[in-house]
Image (tube, rainbow, N blue to C red; front, side, top):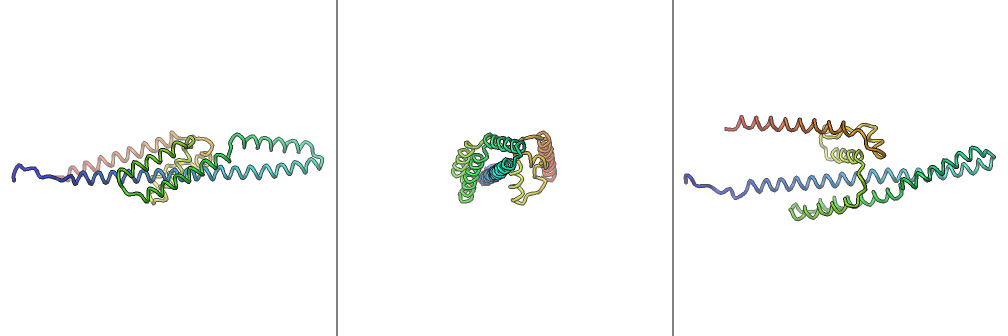
Length: 214
């Protein structure tokens, strides 16, 4: 009948809500897997550092002993000083504790990732999973941003997405990122350019759709 409003039964709204929920689950899943990779990288880094320290200390200590026996006193003093400095560095960095910390966080994020895969896609489940992620993040040490970005790239690559989406980290940033964060302004400019191109493309698509629409 003319003038009568036909109910939409909220189908469009329901589809939009479902799409938003799926996007929230995707974002959560990606974030958790990225964090798992991040802590896996740091656990491996500190574990390798710890093992190398032990080997170097053992070799240097044995070498100093034989040099003393051979009568090369000055050389023995240099090696002993090196071992002491190496031991001091071990105390300051504490690679043992950091390895164990990141290894535990990696395990917890892996467990959460498995729980997300088993979970039903509901608002209640999403809230519970996000709350669990926050509880894990509460125990995280300060973030090493460059390592975090490398973990993001690894996860993005593993899902088969375009290389254009990867953050353009330099070789120096990938190597020294475990020690210091630098070069972020260049990465921020890259991000701003991508956002600008994405906005321009969306505006162009909307304009084209408006022209075609009756």
